[in-house]
Length: 102
Image 1 (cartoon, rainbow, N blue to C red):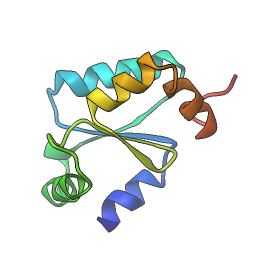
Image 2 (cartoon, rainbow, N blue to C red; image 1 turned 30 degrees about the horizontal axis):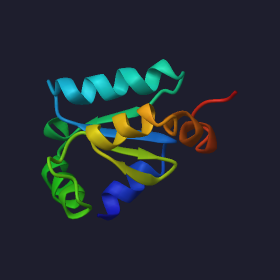
Image 3 (spheres, rainbow, N blue to C red; image 1 turned 45 degrees about the horizontal axis):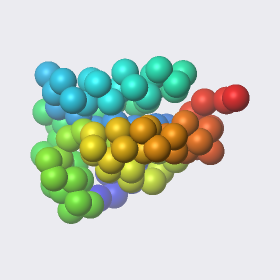
Image 4 (cartoon, helix red, strand yellow; image 1 turned 90 degrees about the vertical axis):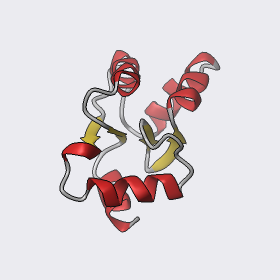
């Protein structure tokens, strides 16, 4: 869990993914569409990826990817992020996290 917190603290937007995960790629494109530059971590390419994946599952990520953090806060997976976007809440969260500016 500590490694996840450490990684999340480095960037306003963090997406945990696996290589070849098209849903994670879609979430990245959505967030980049607002002008943010999310940090992407592909768990299957990290030496401690399995440990990080278990920590994400412990946070309630099921499936474990994509797991999206904005401003150090866990937003959820693809369903939750898409719902935030549809409700018009994603952009304000990105602004508050200093991931984008108005």
